[in-house]
Image (cartoon, rainbow, N blue to C red; front, side, top):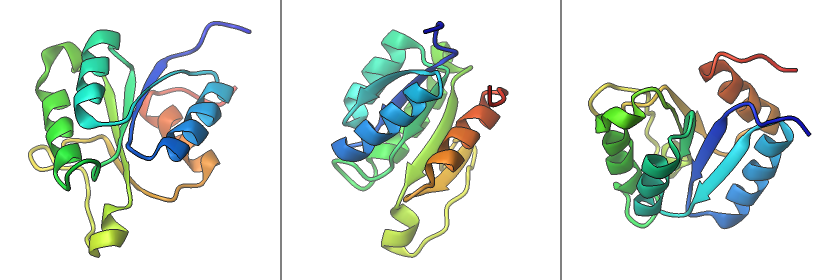
Length: 132
């Protein structure tokens, strides 16, 4: 197998979903690391310097993902990391969210559940890569 193209960090408290997305992204050629809460996600991001972070919003608390998103964007060592928010918060609270520099400074906002091909395509797009 060739070297992974880029590194993806998955941060979500849903372990089954993380396992499924990890497998999917590894099959697409990415190195995938995982974290199951915001604090571990921040620690992993700072240690591993991923190219892309896929982040859930509602984890241990309703605001945990927002806090992690803003902390990732505030860290100069992670300035080049792309940030995809993948969450069901819109369905759960009947709210529509979009990336916003202050409130939710992500590159993309995606709703769960997401089609596997769509997830890979979104990652490819934010990283400027194409399917091989």
